[in-house]
Amino acid sequence: MYLRSLTACCCLAALALASAVAAHGAGDTVVMRTIPAGTYEPLLRTTKDAAAVAVPAFLLDERAVTNADYLAFVTANPKWRRSQVSRLFADESYLQHWTGDLEPGPAAPPGAPVVRVSWFAARAYARWAGKRLPTTAEWELAARAGYDGPDGRNEEAMKRDLYAWLARPVPAVLGDAGALRPDFHGVRGLHGLVWEWVDDFNTAMVTGESRADTGLDRDLFCGAGSVGASDTTDYAAFMRAALRSSLKGPNTTTSLGFRCARDAGPLTASLP
Amino acid sequence: MKTTVLFLLLTTLALGAEAPADACCKEAPVVKKADACCAAPADAAPFSAKSLYQTDVAFTDDAGRSFQLGELHGRPVVLTMFFASCGYACPLLVTDMQAIRAKLPAEIRDQAAFVLVSFDVERDTPAALAAYREQRGLGRDWILLHGNDDAVRELAALLGVKYKPETGGGFSHSNLITLLNREGEVAYQRNGLKGGLDETAAALVVAGAK
Image (cartoon, rainbow over all chains, first blue to last red; front, side):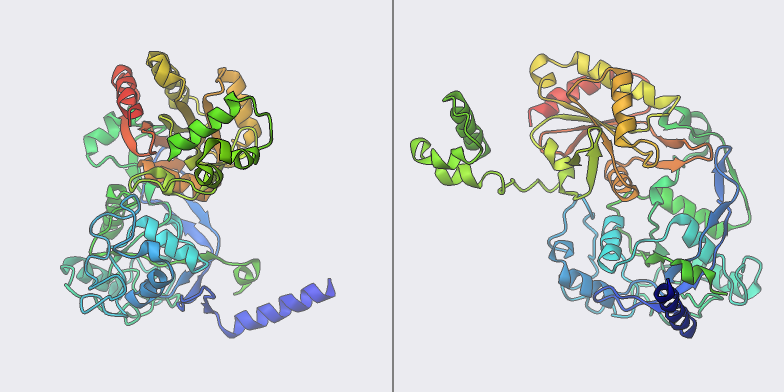
């Protein structure tokens, strides 16, 4: 008992020293930030979905996984190299902008987010790094932060940067994942560079056509009711919901990357 | 290769060898191709590029036995994701699977596997699935699987099944019956709840040929 509390003290001290916790996954060096417990209000929900979902505190990568990170992963895991990946797990566009299997090349700078990766690939990376993908609830809770507080939905600077990004076409070569302005939690680039995979992307129940969603879904989806939106002004959240519902696990796109998450231990959760 | 192994095993059995498994190796000189025989257990054929059996996620069947999807290799498969306490679509999906089964020619039906994988990782324990088997009167060719969150999420992504927990403890989910050919490749999917049973049964006969 004494020993345990001593250990707990040491852990607390260590955590207090650095609220950012470095990953111990081989080859993955991304710093993780603590996202405090909060409440996620699903954007689109049916009458059977909860209006608010409690999200326990968790750790989230400070930035998106980069080409350099991903190179370390494919170097260690040949079956995820472009020439060897199974079509079951990634479509033909997987890492097509890389020069070769182990050469990201000029279109994929080391510090830029890796894109053209499938959900299966992102998940395999996370497992290799000793982490997991964030859930939709976790990702959206983190992405709600502004520069000055945990809820930036009405923060002018945040909104300006967000909508400026949405208005820009995807550049041929993406910028540095670690260079964007950190938000209130110290996390960078949840908006502004790429879209990101979430672990439960396949919870989205939108069939894609509004009339179909009210009429056909009784047959296509068991339990689905009518869909309502919690905040009809949150245009970016609509875009994310539409993207997730349109994706299949092996899909890859030029503007879709990912970052990893991890459960916060009970100690981290109790930190102020 | 596979046929040879099967042939050798059958020969061994037919000869009335009630010996343990390694008898196969000892009797090798008699049946010639010793190496093929002995290598068989470790030497599982690699799965095709579109085979779902490439996934390494593991499930547990309703007898509590660990189950890899690759164990279905070589059989035509009818697979549906469901949950046992579902009141609306799932009972219909299982009834439809039974109807498809009834429509199959005997030679396909005798080889086919009917697989139910539950979304409900909390409540659909192997024991709960065993009770469901009893309740629905499902025979030995039905395989009921429980998996953890990770395994269920991955299989759903492989099949294109969407699902979401609801506040009442249930799930909303795609109503999808998937047919796999003997390689474990998706051969056909019936989306929705109405009809299509003849087409699905016919598709399984085609899938069973591969």
